[in-house]
Image 1 (cartoon, rainbow, N blue to C red):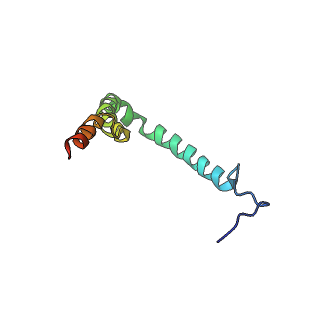
Image 2: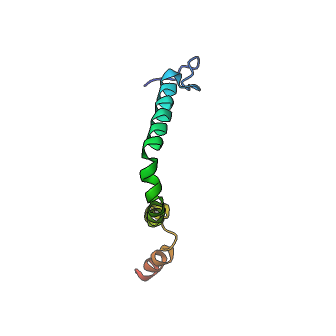
Image 3: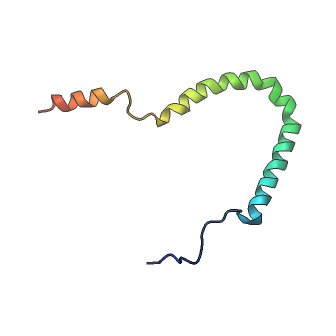
Length: 81
């Protein structure tokens, strides 16, 4: 069993230089991705927006566990002897 050392803080507010390198890489990659593929994305943008609607309906409902079926479960409990 290990005990926490009260003199040693485990939280890092800045994240060190690795975090800055990562976000710098993400910024450069995003710039070149947008700059090089702008022509492809702009032509398909209306279709991407239309495709996003059914995908959001499909994947967004996974967090809704049980709002509509509560009455059915209570009725089953009453029916069983």
